[in-house]
Amino acid sequence: MTVDVITFGCRLNTVESEVIRREATSAGVHDAVVVNTCAVTAEAVRQAKQAIRRLKREQPHARIVVTGCAAQTEINTFAAMPEVDRIVGNEDKFDAKVWAAGGKIIVSDIMAARRMRAHAIDRIQGRTRAFVQVQNGCDHRCTFCIIPFGRGNSRSLPMDEVVAQARRLVANGYREIVLTGVDITNYGVDLASSLRIGTLVRRILIDVPELARLRLSSIDSVEVDSTLLDALADEPRLMPHLHLSLQAGDDLILKRMKRRHSRSDAIAFCEQVRRLRPDVVFGADIIAGFPTENESMFCRSLDLVDECGLTQLHVFPFSPRPGTPAARMPQVDRTLIKERARRLREKGEAALRRHLDLEIGARRRVLAESRALGRTEQFMPVRLTPSVEPGVIVELTVTGHDGRQLMAA
Image (cartoon, rainbow, N blue to C red; front, side, top):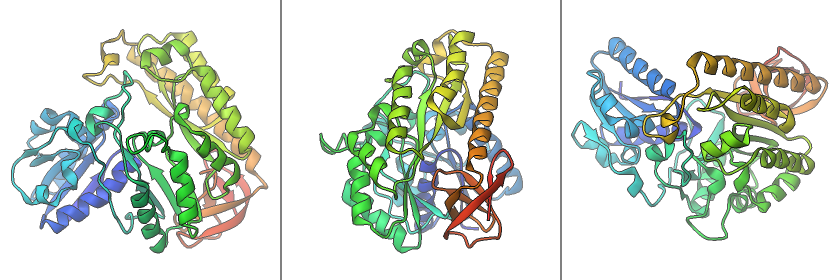
């Protein structure tokens, strides 16, 4: 065994795990398992710790290295684990010299990071859609979120470097690229006063004409610029699927979260985009049981699913992150949080079924992720009959669904 990387969390970590594998291998690291952690919830940290203990039981002679957001924000937690041989910080993990050096804990000040490093990678292991990291960090301070302290302040990759990476991946056979980052709709603010994510999208589509599909990861609707809206309206290669960082549907809870949009802002944005791109599908992150949330506040989050026409929900039961303002607010009972999360998930499942019903009989262009499973342009999962070669885009007719994914032939 040389270097094995176990990845938790977001698409950003998926990209960075490829860089970790390359840099650690080039530094001569061997017989090591790197755990690239997530810190977005307490549950994510618990899962990482559980995986570390299991790995040590299964591979007692392997050196276990912990990196990622949780390693940056909870150094002492992992340093106290006897299974952990080394902790590497979120910026330090990209440096081959760090991997070649000694020392149990190498974690630099993430807030001192001023420039985003380019990650030139040829492929992403096991993926038919490629991710390009265009931005890192976050300048906002939502009261529930620990991620800025794991990622630092917002910094963007220059457009020329993004385009070069997109060309590299397309040349290696990728038909779809997903732009990813911590806060991608804040892209470019640190590079030029007029530069925004919409400009980057236009540039990629113009300069990489061989790219069949361009997709955005999670966005903050209040930051969306007019150029991006124009691209959604008139560029068919920009996929009609937006995942929104909404978090709640009640204005007072949004204010206590220190979010920068209101309920009416979210509804108006979805209506505007739907006018521009009628085939668009919306997903969203929503937190259940944020501190001080009462039943009527929660019901406004439930109602938002219908009012925004959300189809794919990521539901997060609130978990306090030490060091965040929300952790010091009056907490909702854990049993109630779980119950509200269940109700939100059921609401989301019903919305998804309604959407899948409407898809029956439609012709859809599907990117095969495996021989048996693909994704439509709207990011709907599709069971493929017959099987299709991974990475190929085919046009199919939707014949039915099982409540979670479409069936097509």
